[in-house]
Image (cartoon, rainbow, N blue to C red):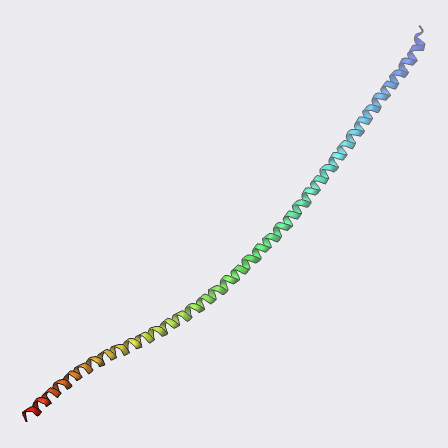
Length: 142
């Protein structure tokens, strides 16, 4: 066997094998690069989706806060109005109570004066009766 004929075959086989290995390594690196790009794109899409959702929730949250603020303002306005109405109603009630108290006082004075007049009338009636008895007694003795 001639070594000079085998050697070119071995070298050709080795170069072919080396080419195959280099091709495999290159293909593996390319696949890895493509996989990393796909992963990075998926990650970026996920981040974008999360950020969009966060913005939507933030917008909705801010709208709800504004609704609550509006409700609180409306409630404050209602409380102020009701307080004003309550003060007005209290002053009307106090005025009416004062008027009724004055009327009751006048009524009580009339009742007291009537009682005094009735008592005086009773005393006068008794005096008239006594006087009538005396007159009768005097008329009998004449």
